[in-house]
Image (tube, rainbow, N blue to C red; front, side, top):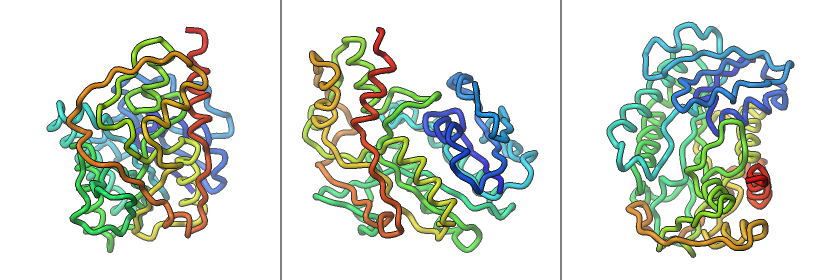
Length: 307
């Protein structure tokens, strides 16, 4: 079986590429990335057992997928992902993310590929204790342009469900190390600031609010599970390692960096109440996500030990 990974040099994609031999079904993999953020190092030292082709290409170009050849599965990761900055670059993010998505969707429909589409738990705006995939539509209130785009993409997929086999994975906030890792998401950003002895920026309303977080190890296990179990039933699943408050995350960091400083700020993205996200639906399918955010914090801090 052949796999296509878009955005393959990014935080999630580069981790998947590192672990490709663990997905026994996959014999050949095609990687696409425009390297806009210069993460060429994600392509270094790939294991010899991996049969990989890389295409330097911009998925907004409708011709970008013309030379790919036969593909069985697609993991679509190519997008602008910085939710907070999406307020500043709103039009650019809509044009880029929806443009890439529509080209990938059309490719999958035309070539009968099965699609793993990454969405986000940030599509939820339900101000209650727990939220799941079957909540009423009125409680889907994305709090950023990035999250709004994810919901638009989900709706487009649902309108095309007779033409394509797919699964939608609503990821929690990613934590963990990879060759293409970035530092705009909470755990990675906090670990970096603590390591260089800079104040950790925290939104005033967020300290005791619960949010879902996802270890890269669990993210990969979700991809592997979908391919191994042929889970392409046109359903959506919450994928998370656990629900934590900012205080919980800071306490984990304090185990390794004792004297961290906090700088409280306001932000337009933090305007909803605390909520937990349920992953019971994917658990019922047999996938148990149990990797620890603690170990991701430890590994990230260790990367910066000598600074």
